[in-house]
Image 1 (tube, each protein chain N blue to C red):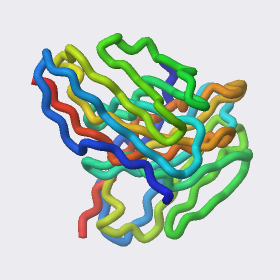
Image 2 (cartoon, chains in turn cyan, brown):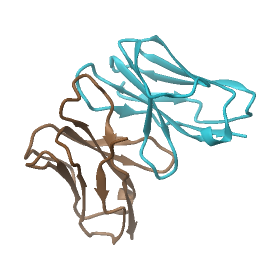
Image 3 (cartoon, each protein chain N blue to C red):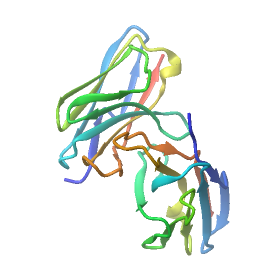
Image 4 (cartoon, rainbow over the protein chains, first blue to last red):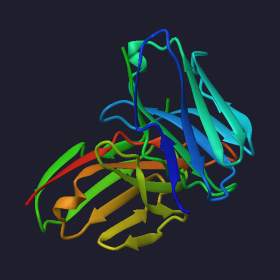
Length: 112
Length: 114
């Protein structure tokens, strides 16, 4: 299995809702990432987990809460989001020491 | 934050033409990565480069790690309609160590006229 999967593909939520994005990889990668991407812009790093521990938080608002239950899974819990949080949310993974990151197809999030 | 200078910003070409794009930085990089992203999908890794002067091919795609370590180039030969998408360069600067934060270019949007 050489891919990163993400669910759901699309998500529409209100500003008072709580939802979660899920990411899974079975490549044995020990680093996993969350990115936010606006249209026609490069991905912006949000969080990095290395060996299931949070290693980078790019000053992301607390309404985004990451979780890494095990080495294959990564979640992003969403609560009280704002319309400007609407974007494509990408998950990626990489091997322990190699820099190449492999991306999932993303979750298109719309906040109403 | 730090960004790479990627050019051109967009290209509109005829099928069969060759394409060239590049990324430059004011600082030295250890690794250069080239990704392609199609609408509604995540970026797909095309080529990874690790050494100054390295030239690597992937089918009709060829990428080079610049000798100065401050730039990289991607060429696409004999373009076809499915080459349409946004091409991003990304890299790790010298001294990044275990920091996994890639630095990204702003992308080159490619349109191919059949």
